[in-house]
Image 1: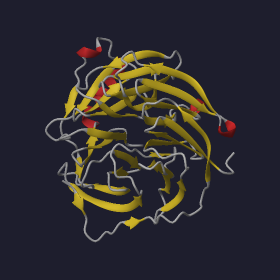
Image 2: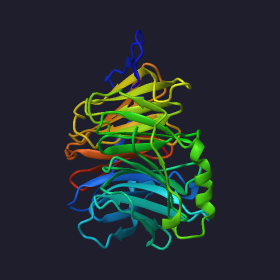
Image 3: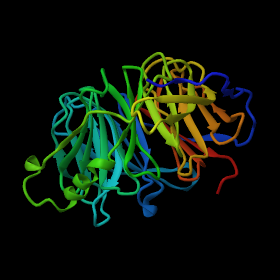
Length: 370
């Protein structure tokens, strides 16, 4: 288990706003009565950078951000099971470039929705409990990973419907997995975190032939030789409570728990002894009143900034790559009082969306941005 190195004091960001960028509310939509748990822009396809989707209850809705704060509803998918409650969604695409929306939630079934036809392309059954997060491999956008309450992470091929790998077992998570993310450049690496208070880094390198095989498999998906990855290459105890969001920032990891801050740290692996090594905590980004779990941050395409909501309906926008960290903006509106479950930053960070527990979507635009 990785422990913090001695003598490396992390740099803590100041909550004094820098006035680096000013944002104003340009729209608010009341989508429904049920809580909205996720919102995400499509970064997979350059044609649709201004398109985003939300999930809440048994509904997935697709919108487009237009000029002047306008939000146009494009389509909506309602699950056949009225008791489904979606918690997460991710944009992906088929090998021919068709945009897909991949959603999952309380039922543990992953729905792959063809955004062109608004119909279900495939459904993946395999997780034994609800799904807390789905992420897409940007380098191969027909690969997605899912993190589940069943203590596992699964790797899927959305084109063929195959479950390729299951990250679970002897070295796996010991409670719900809340978040998972692909490394931005090392295609073999993922990071996951959860209710066992750990962040685990996994490698698919020795299983990569199975990933390649999943693209050419012609038999039934159920006959595919799905492999278990039982041991992570690194386990870190950065937090002392649930870890509900982790994202790679290059080779560093941004993670957050329920203690009002996002932490940037570096895993220092020892090649000889997998699972062991030290962590160097580099920076801390404070987020007041962010002490309930299942609040996720988001970043712009180039990871220049992160936006995170809190339980009082406020958003904090942090510059990620400056030391000490700079608070770009603190956003609040007198009518936005409900917990913000997730934010979505647009490609260049000029638009910030948030989805709330009260079923609202808020749009903030940078003042002076075209």
